[in-house]
Length: 177
Image (cartoon, rainbow, N blue to C red; front, side, top):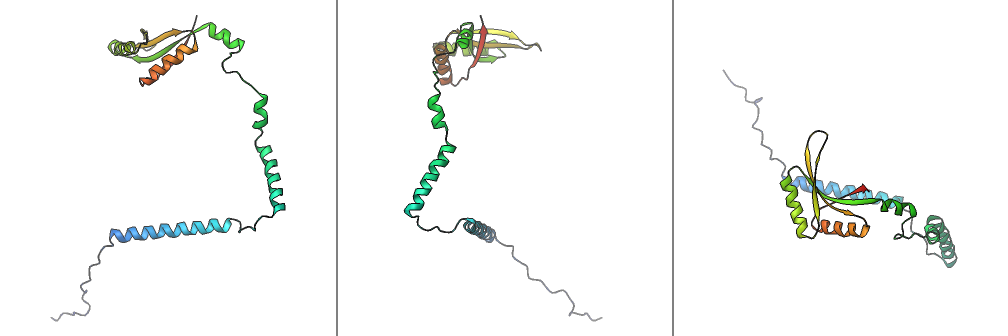
């Protein structure tokens, strides 16, 4: 029997895949084109080039700018009227401060050995600390390393700076007398 070679599937040429470089160039061209479109859109929305200002128009603009600045920035007038003395406490604050003492808590640990290790480090830095053991409601025991008590802000600030220099972030605790 004879074969019909006319309708036989021809050997198709294998297509090469598109290289990565071609994809990269295509993406860059698309990004540049979209950026150009955005730039042109912004230029279209921006006002046209203005004429050189004349002397009369510049005077009008400066007076209108002064008026708008006055309405926008009124703190220049308000702040000189107000004065605050940051170092002089109110009488209410002075009463509260005199009736309170403060502790700086440098850390809280599950084991006494960890707390004792921190206490030794702080002692080498000149900070006198104590270890207070506390039990929480769920029965866990915590050992707190605390410095103080302090009565004035200067001592608190100095101790906080020493602790922060050692990369320890203390917690300020107030204790009623």
